[in-house]
Image (cartoon, rainbow, N blue to C red; front, side, top):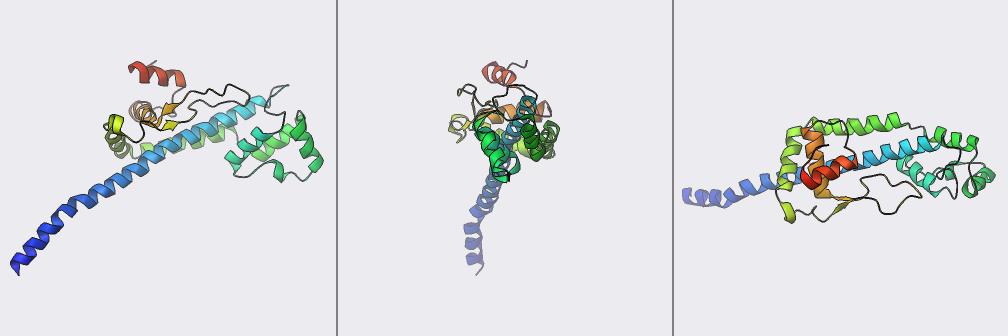
Length: 212
């Protein structure tokens, strides 16, 4: 009987290491995916800044034309389309086919009800919540970076690190998700920046490890 128990224990012994490792891998995967969400908060902040800057212009690309960009931004921020909320169909058609009047622009901003300050606070607070578990995130990021070329994120792209304005160049700079982890680790977790650095600092760091 004793021999049977010993054999049974020896059989279970390897699993004692497998299950904790699997649990650790899953937790790290979740943390890394959380880091990637920082880019979404950055994009939302950049979009809201752009909208509020454009409303001050006499001739704005954003507030003219077919309105698809306004609708896309509204959906991203509020979760539903803007123009479907308008009861005045004549006003809606006019907005979709010509330059919006000051009244229509103000109505859009009022319905958006979201300022650059609001967006920045959400962006900063999301990063701050990650910093509360700094050591755990560093451990997971370091483990992924150590994989180098074998990392699944080496060839996955983090689209549009810089916000691409409507009507601008379709060639927006991108970085890989693995590079995004490097940048996040260095500037957010090590240097304790509130938010992600601008693209010039990112490219300098990724090319030569330089800090500018």
